[in-house]
Length: 482
Image 1: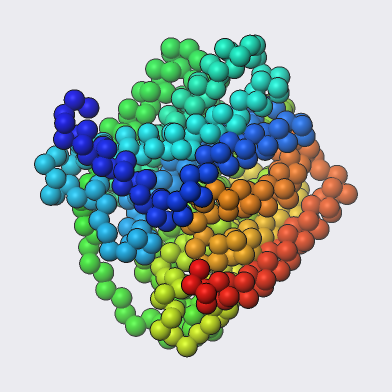
Image 2 (image 1 turned 45 degrees about the vertical axis):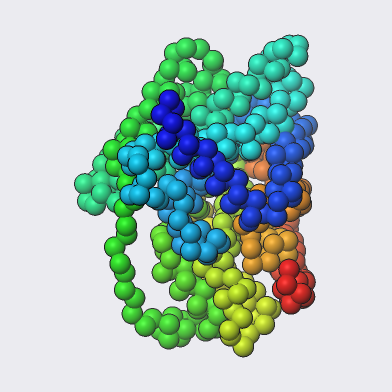
């Protein structure tokens, strides 16, 4: 970046990102976030290896996490404008100001991407690499000496960062194609079909990604993964316009029609808000689809590493249950406590409405993708039933935990160090044993399946219990101005 204006824009975007998070997530508690991430990764890695998971599988999971995080970062920055507006007020980010800046649109977009990569590589991916290194060193990885361990940590950081970049570029390219009308959608479908055909034909797609460069750090693998990244961003640069305005939309008076179906006014309003926001219910489907794709990849990878085919029902059911967090997040993006002050309702009424809307939307979406997984991969009937119970139980548990910890602001969990630590521990403790059973212990015995099914029911009840305890807690908090 030899151009002074480009460097100035990069610095201001970096400052804008820091101020945004610092304002949203309470200053110093946000600054603890990297330490919490490193501690959680170190603890989870040690637990997984101790229960039989290989270090290679842990590394594969971390790359999948980085890819999903890249997808999510791109979707928030470019799709969720109204969500950002609800959080920050009526503001315009620098990336959306290309019309008034003395720089071309492609350069503003390029600076934004570089800023995101630098920011999250330091804040999020470096702590992950540091936390995972003890697992590689102590878990049987081919690491000898401190120098080699540092080298492995740096290599892991680099490939995680490139994987994050791949996810970010994929989202930008997908949005750019979607906004190009029929021709863009046709090209997107052709690319997706080509990737799917290669996968179905037995091509090891992971070998052509930054994860492949970590597994086999040769110039050929590094060059191949960089070529894939270049192709994705070339497509994104050719199709995406950050200053493009969406067409104005009109909506008819649908409230009473929806009320007849839902039966409760606040829950109806919540679902209508999601429907009329940018992306509509497609956002909810997209979040679940990402978990579906990641689970499919992990099932294949775990099967190759361990030589044992994972349980489709248990593995897909447990992971898809995590969509409970993203679903609740979307249900709270369009309004907040202030939006309810003008109505004669209590905080408990609002939380009850969110719970009802969640039950109508969250488990239904998760079970839809779960049914697709079963139709695709098959599996014993007993495992399918237990997986469905786990999905609903985990989704309700994640919902209840999120409501109890963060009330109507689930975004705070993402970067508030203390809250993220509690949420991560509360989720990992019941879920890690289930994932270990699903991925590494198949075929599952009748006794283990019964225990997993009972565990799913208990998680669901625990989630409902946490949600009920959250009602008086957040009523008092919001009344006191928290």
